Length: 342
Image (cartoon, rainbow, N blue to C red; front, side, top):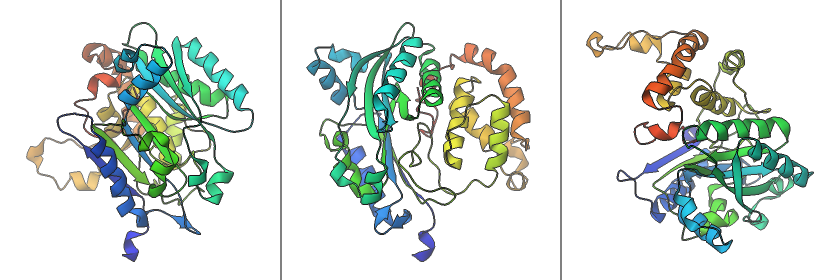
C-alpha cells in the first residue's frame, strides 16, 4: 500500500443515458473517501478534495423562484453559474469589479449567493486561508452561439483585474473544492448535502501536493481539468502557451496551467476539446512506433507550437464549419468531461 500513497486520486462516474441523479454524486464522493490515502496529509489535514459536476439545475431553479425570478431560466441554454473564490480582504471591491466585467460582456447577474459553506467543517490550516465562496446565477444576453467564449473572456478579465479565483464559470458544469479531505465536502458545501442536487456525471479528485504548497485555489478539479502526477515539461508548455497568447493562471500549479492552456485552445483557438487534449498531450513517439502500421496513426509532431500554429490557422474555418466555437456543441461526443467549461 505504501507505493499507492504518492499520487493524486481520480474518480469519474457518468450515466450513459445522461439522466441526472443524486446517486452519481454520492458514489463519486464515496470513491474519493475510499481513496483518501491518495491525498497528502499534514497533521491529519488533507491537501485538498473536489468534484466537478453538472450544474444542479433543480437547486438553482428553486433559488431563482424564491427570488421571484422565473425558475425555467435555470434550464435555458443561456443560463450559467459562476463559482468564485474571493479573498476576505477587499471582498466588496473585488465583487463590484467582477460585476462590472460581467456587464461588459453582456452577462446579466440574476442572483448571488453567499454563505453556503460551513466553516466549522474545515481544519485549522484551511480556516486560515479560507476564501469567500461566491456563487452567481448568470444569463448570457443575446445569441448563445458565442456564450462560452464570452464567459471565458470574462473569467480571464476577472482574474487579471482582481485577486479572485474562478473556480468554475460555465453553462454546463460546476466545481466544488476545498483544502481538506473528501469526507469534508458535503459537510462544508451545503449544496452537496442538498437532496435536490442531481448530476448525470461527476469527476472527483484528491490532491497530493508535490511542486507547490496547497491552498483552496490550487485544489482540483479546475474549471475543465484534473490531473494526477507531475508535468516535467511544464516550463516549456508555459513558454509556448504564452507565445500563443493564452492567459495562464496566476501563480498556479502545473496542472492549473494545463487547464488554462486547454481552455485557451478551445476558446481562443477554436479547437474542440478532444483536439486540444491531443495537442497538449501528443502520443509518445516510441509507443506509436510499436503500433501496427495498419492502425493509420501518423507520427506526432513533438513541438506544441508547430502543431498549434497549424491548428490556429484553421481554427476559424473549423469552428464555423462544424459549429464548434462553443464546446457545448461537442459535449455529448467529446469523451472525457475535461472541457465542460461552456
